[in-house]
Length: 295
Length: 247
Image (cartoon, rainbow over all chains, first blue to last red; front, side):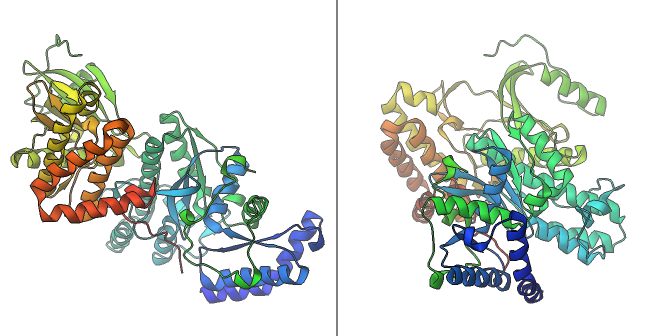
């Protein structure tokens, strides 16, 4: 799969760049710099982006700005909501973490001990045959399946201190479906447990850090149910929560651009010959000196 | 503080749901002393003596059944940990009554001041208690329990002169070095953030007491606690620090 996606990326890359420039009404010559997501993520896809960015940067003699994909998810949310010093729940297919800024970097307060939340939902949907497609009109297959379902007992809820865990939940849910439980009930309960546990980790993070603002970002952020839970949690603690449009919650180019812009202003560039991808580039390895003066 | 005038309902025979409901109502009428992230702490009479009523409240963002399930599990776990600690001679609050289905634990009311407050008044005496705090935590670790929140606010210097460790709400049965090291680290951070001027000697005394009880095993845990400290401010309490990305 990763390779097929990468092949697709390389085929459309040129059109995407042209379309982006056209819709912004600028040419490559008007650009100050080119921002590129070097990680974290899957190698084949990252390599396509990196190759295109390196080519553009060297051909047009533009500075190349390295951007961390996870940092970018947080920065776009801060940019869109105006919440400047939040605790952030980042939920996607490849990542699930609660982060907040401290002393120069985003620090990971809690995360999943095994699989990311998005991966849990996708894998479950695929295994029980309700996906692909995983998301139709912005609604995930598990969310759709959960309609009309009710909470049933028997699935494990695991929050250990500041971390959550989903692999046991996935196994138990699949087992339950195979032994004849109503699919809608299993979907409903799986979702309820998965979302509640990340919100509880977020709640502990909020209490621990004493933040007053809450953000949700990443591909799973589009979920209405998750949004409602976070809103209720924030209200309970007198904190402010603002959702961001689904378009900017999932992976997008704007978040890389806006983070690259901030980084560029602070003098971050990378030599084309050294712009390698970093599949496991952690969010807490990135300095964010622009934090208080963003955007 | 506790004034104790109302009489309690029959807490020993809560056989029907209606009586459980009336217990919650009655408990909610007691004097609230602390509202934590997980529970509400109140003081009230229990069979004629003052007691602590710890009531877990449902999370508004969860399905009521899930919230109820977690409340029951966690109440059971906390009571189990306390019973285990008490049974092994660790100075925890004595259990008076446990109602897992409504998330209520009734405990001995310990008369005293927190080690945190005590340290402000008597820094020298606090060093002696800090050493004892270390040996109490070591004993808990020795019987396979990590406390989860052993700050100076959770050690009580009792009026009779002893030291007790309270609040087992985040405790767990574990033999993991990391879990125990997190405890040691949390104590250190607590003394550093609230007793800066005597932090070093407080923590040194704590370690003396800790090592005295745990012996050789203590060194491994203390070393790990140091590692946790080096990981960074918020990352420090984390159990795993791998940023998980698909690859």
